[in-house]
Length: 259
Image 1: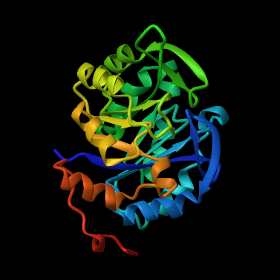
Image 2: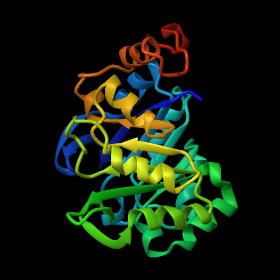
Image 3: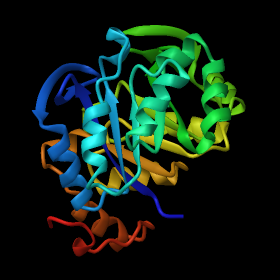
Image 4: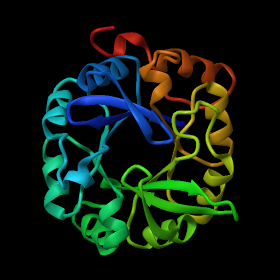
């Protein structure tokens, strides 16, 4: 199976932003323009996360997703502040293919069952912000690493898998924005714990980082900072992975408009 290359776009209000270890956010441009660029470069999926949605109890991405969905024909996952079936429906109705849930599910896990039962497991992603513990293991955080849930990451993903989650987005807070590769022990532990596709996020900045994550069982990687700073292009990444034997979706530049 080919590894999926996902462009991750963290959004605050109307701005594309990126920080380090989920702190010190900097503006990185217009999210719709960047989404179209990544689509044109062959992104397998787009991942939008409204980083302040839970804080303000609303998702600010409906207009952005609706706009981009008109000319970027790849799957889109949207997360941030999704705390009800109605909130999920609002995003699915404007073009999102999947919704990513975090904070609300840690407080009310039955929300996962509700979304999965209504829209199918293929439409439901559990976003897990994982923080390594000095004593070993990882704890699940919410609100961009600000709040502790008291949940062990592995116990949480195992429970969530029984509630119909179709995919896990595992973001290492410690590796986020650092560019030193994924937390391989973390992704290995999660892929061993659940028989559900896993997306690795946090720290991926090269083809070697992707290969290392794939070797630990992930089915997709989500890349943010390296793309936003143009330190890495999806075209070059796909070519390098294919050259070194990692299975990726073939992509010709003429497939997408505007290239």
